[in-house]
Structure formats: structure tokens, C-alpha cells
Image (spheres, rainbow, N blue to C red):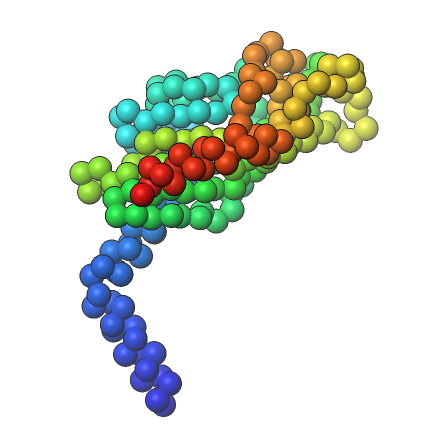
Length: 215
């Protein structure tokens, strides 16, 4: 009985503390913002997707680096309207400081691609870093950076030969080897200097910059 009374008492204290209640609310709003950004992206809900970002937001991915208009509704060379693109995400790790937040978000993107004329499935494992600010009382993404962790490429039909020449992948970076191969195979371009787990010093530098901004 005393335990039940104590739990009710503590709950009342939490609900009656504006500062704590506000922080809980902010965490949930940020979480919904980040989930929405990923879901709107793959479901092609461009208006809702664009609304996740501040007007001057900067988005840096494997295929573009620029403003909202260079990202929302646009796609890399290996993607097309006919191909599926699925995002599966983990829980968001939110670092909150007043009207600023830094969010680390693990995500797996699965997409269908054509490799040397054959159907294949490309799976990319990434970590997305978001800088978020409360602007006019509403949380908005002001920067989004993707970090490549690993990837894999498999035929859509087991046993199909994708006719991959080992020489074409020999010098590609391990953190996004198959993404790079699929992009180039589709006639696109990709930088050899993207953020990836095989270059940890570069990732540490980004984290330091973001945490300094958060302070």
C-alpha cells in the first residue's frame, strides 16, 4: 500500500514540474520528427518531408550535399520510381540542451537495384546525425549527415550471377563498397571521401563539432 502511494506521489511530482514535463515533451516531439523524416522519405510524401526541415537546412548524403530542394523528392542514380526503397530504423538517441538537440539514428535501407542487367537488392547500414532546433516553438531539422557503416549486395533471385568483376570493387571503401559499386554501375558518381566507419578520426571530428554546437 505504501509503495503504491509513493508511486502515485512521485508521478504527481513529475507531472507538476514544468521543466521536467517540458523535457519529456521535447524528447517525444524530436523523436516523432526524426521518424517522420525517414517515413515521409520512403513513402514519397514530399510536402510532409520538406516540412521536417528548416528553410536553410543542410543535408549531406552519399549522393548530394545541399539544401532541402536538392534532397526532398530527389534520388540517387541507382534508384528509380519502379524500385522499392525501405527504411528500418532503431531507436533515436537524443541529446537535448534547451532549444537545441543532437540526434543519433541507426537506420537500414533496403532497395532494389539493377546490376549488369540483373535484379539485385542493396542493403545499406547507416547512422544518421541530425542537428535539430526549436524554431518559433516547433522543432525542425537544420542539418542531416549520414555515416556509412557497412553494406551488402545480393541477387534478388538466389543463385543469379550478377557478373561482378572483382577488379571493379577491389579499391572501394569497405564502409560503402556495394553502394559505390551500384552507383557507378548505374552510371552515377560517388565520392571516395564520404563519412564512414573505416575512417574513425573523421567521425570523431564531426561528433566534436556537433557537441560543441550543442553546448
